[in-house]
Image 1 (cartoon, rainbow, N blue to C red):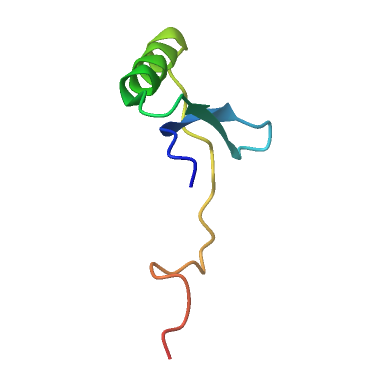
Image 2: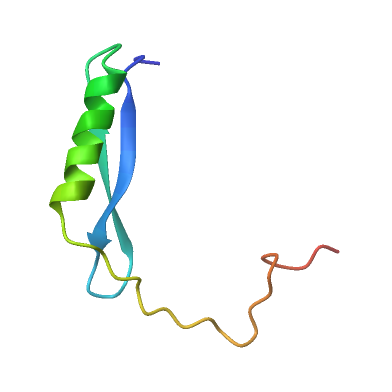
Length: 67
């Protein structure tokens, strides 16, 4: 489409535990710049804790009935 490089990374979690994403995009053909900005962001922020999600007891491993 626009031929612009982009990177999507985790930027944290909302108060109810949902993931918040950050998209970094760059000028056309500036893949290296996008990767450098992504690398800088991931090294500049504190480590993220995993959300405290409970898996329902009736959850299956494949997302539903296959029949």
